[in-house]
Amino acid sequence: MQMCELCGKLVDKLYKVMIEGSEMYVCKECLKFGKAPKTYSRVKKVKKMAIGSYKGNKGVKKPRRRDIFDSLPSLREDYGDVIRKAREKLGLSIEELAEKLKMKATVLHKFERYELEPSDEEIKKLEKFLKVKLTESSEGFEFYNISSEDDSLTLGHFLKIKK
Image (cartoon, rainbow, N blue to C red; front, side, top):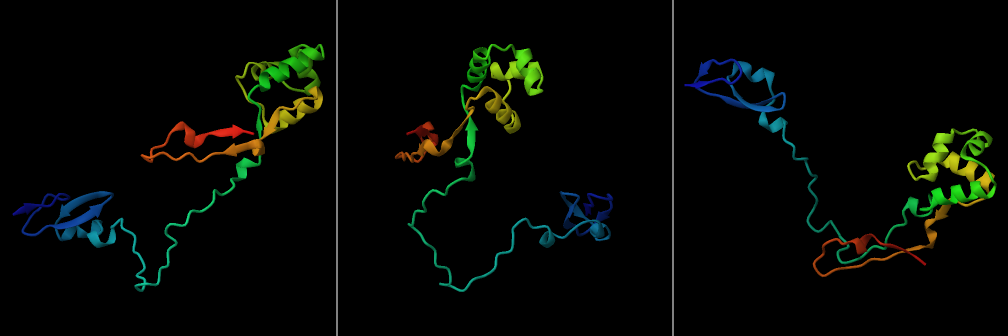
């Protein structure tokens, strides 16, 4: 005699079912609370194909697809210094510049200290007023594919070198 894991009843035969994500052995009366093993399989059904109908292109290397982000401008690494130098060149304090751009002085201060990156709108405002360029396009970068003998990734696989 075996005991049902759900109701505790002693029975001769137990059935394997899935109940709320747990696999359990239950009696015939408790079967209605679960799913049979055939219905809870995680393996997806694959369509059968006729032999020889698949023609793969093994050995053909595809060229690197251009990523949409490759052509987008990105914020310069020295944006904080550029903002500070342009502001000082105009003889303005952070508070005065913030007032003219209708921004908070604390936000501008964080830009200059690299604590915060400006949004696209803020970049446009700053570039227009300060007459500086805070973005750079990544089109001048060349991507290198560096292969290694042991097929492990290194920093060289992720290098972008400016021309």
